[in-house]
Image (cartoon, rainbow, N blue to C red; front, side, top):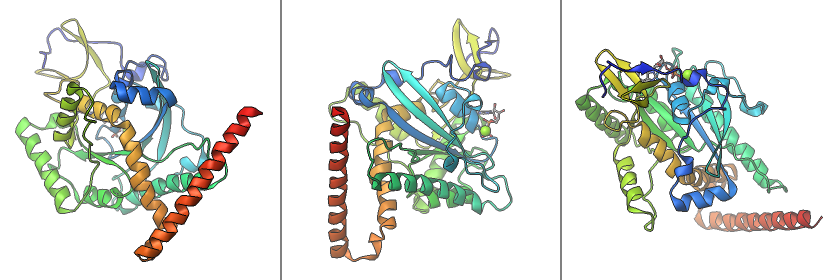
Length: 351
Ligand SMILES: Nc1nc2c(ncn2[C@@H]2O[C@H](COP(=O)(O)OP(=O)(O)O)[C@@H](O)[C@H]2O)c(=O)[nH]1
Ligand SMILES: [Mg+2]
């Protein structure tokens, strides 16, 4: 932590930036080689939802993670994605990031109004509806004949913000996570961790883990790295896994201290650099998202969406042998659709 003396606020607040134009380097270009190669080829679509009570720092975190001012980003025009619910808004915005040849189309879905009304039960129902609607749109697109250019707007990851004042999960947090954990990859976040001492933070992380265990809440399981990844990445990954839930201090204000530019928060006793891992898991959270972007998408497709699809096809009501048979038929249909799609592509190339 730097002392407050000699610290100067730079005129480089994200809120002063023009929409997406002068944003800084995020790190997608620093992807581990294997992941970089895969992503660079085809680009990447990631949808991230942020949920938590007003004032917990959702907008600040997103703006500092991606070095953009989301308020000035264009909202998606797709009417299906701009549903307004009675007490909570579902607000998607999309940013295109390109770093070192890696293209990422990132959609952030903010949920202002969550937890603000007296009866909040409907809040997570709106979120649930939204997630299901995206599954449905994908399901319909996938079942159609033209499967070549399906846009994937399914929610791949959900940051759930927990207030540091509560010292654990509140009943609404538990209810909401229980309703969503089979639908989406939940990453729990302790908001405004600067309100806690180191001991309080350790205790709070433990309380949350115990509560999640007790209520059988399954959050996103950060996977191990491939065996052939380099040792530095493996070590980084072990640290990521051990620090859940991520304790976050974030800021979009840039200060100059000791000749360095630092995004941080200033207090009477000094300056906290949000990228300093001794104070905040901010960098770990960003690394997690970058390193495991592909896994988040894969788990969404193979686990959460597959659950939705099986329910939709009502396969769950059949017994095991019947289900197997139906699933085989369904797989065959998918293979034929893929083949058709391939032939369509080849024809289009020839024409
Ligand atoms: N102390 C502290 N304040 C924060 C932090 N993150 C955001 N804030 C402040 O909290 C207030 C609400 O933040 P905002 O991002 O608008 O919250 P949202 O309503 O969840 O989107 C703003 O004044 C932020 O500057 C943090 O990590 N620590
Ligand atoms: Mg906000």
